[in-house]
Image 1 (spheres, rainbow, N blue to C red):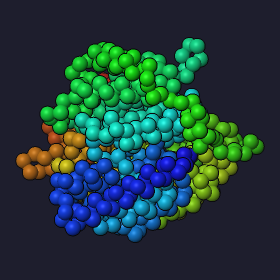
Image 2 (image 1 turned 90 degrees about the horizontal axis):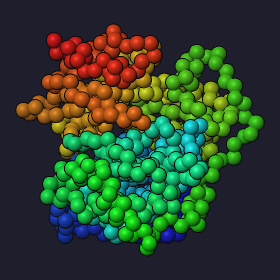
Image 3 (image 1 turned 135 degrees about the vertical axis):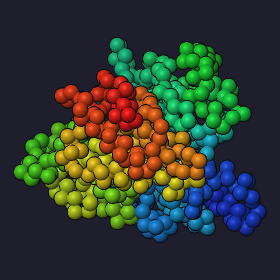
Image 4 (image 1 turned 135 degrees about the horizontal axis):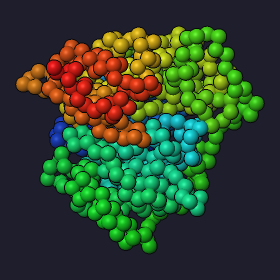
Length: 544
């Protein structure tokens, strides 16, 4: 994983000192809240319902054990003993005191972490495939490119005051595990017919009140032009974005209004204009960064066999383990979706245990997923049973990856000032309703996602089943959506009809599942069945 050099460390340390001065001035009354707001947002600090919330960046979801232990320490020392992993591969703390915020940032800096550009109108945390460097189906490890684009865009003077926030994802496999086409800018590593490495480029995805799936705007971009092309995209958006309406300032609105063809023409023209003097990827710098992502020292004699004499262990392996590119190794998914738990939450004690296990079993490395789970990327198959026993003893071994209880949910009205409805209780009630492990497995892959407001932090637009909480004359109301996907078969879910109250939405999900059981053919996922039969039979079951 990437390690700070002296310039990285100096930059982060200087930012801590700067923010400490800003926070002290706010506490002393020398800055108003309106003056302080843009300063704190650029440092990841939100003012929510009950306290400040701090969002910490985890670039492309990669963490070391040392860093996770620091996150656990912060949870104990400054919060209420837990952290919340998010759909951007970050972690949030929801009970922060302004007087202590700079101290937290200083502690993060000691383990090469920060909260810079995790909020505000800036280029946010760059995300990537959580299996990067391990997946059997990837072309190459995409993280060196994600790190390079992160460095190139941090504090970039031309893009420090964006029309709105901007999100970038980089992947390197046909299976999209990072919801790449739901991003403002997506890069997919490919090889052309000549064997040259390049990117497919997608622009204009996003969720919120006007969701879009990003269209392909360039079929092949040589990898060395990644940054100059990013500059061209950002310049076109900066120049032509609507700035009179906060709801119409995202790049997806410009792409939609112009159409992909016109937008592509503008970007290509801008790119050709800047290309002669472009600050493009220097191979020497890419090579330097790539050294930090070299594969670990795998045991070349590691055995491929797994002892399945324990049936519960076999169920966990079948559901939560993915194929590794190295023989004798596996990718382990750790579900943060226990029975009656809060999706994405981890206690300080759990984080400490996971750090210890990563150190012991996964070359001191772990990942955060956009589905609010954790991953050990490199585990010997011969160690899986011992690892499972330790995870199971700590309540960290639900065998529910991609099943109905593996719910994505935003914090909702329990914490967020923007929310109209609670997400967490709905997620808990649905998980309890479908808690039977065998029943979940019988349903197969079913991605359920819940947002407490139209901003869609819970990604409800791309759930196989999506739930959106809205305010209906002062009452929490929940809309049901069907047919979305954030994967390589990306699509947007459609609203079924009138909304439901909190208990009613749980019943509506069950009605939808019952109809799916009636309609599905052999081997069909819920999404496959929906796409085959359409909305009508589900709507009839829900409302007739």
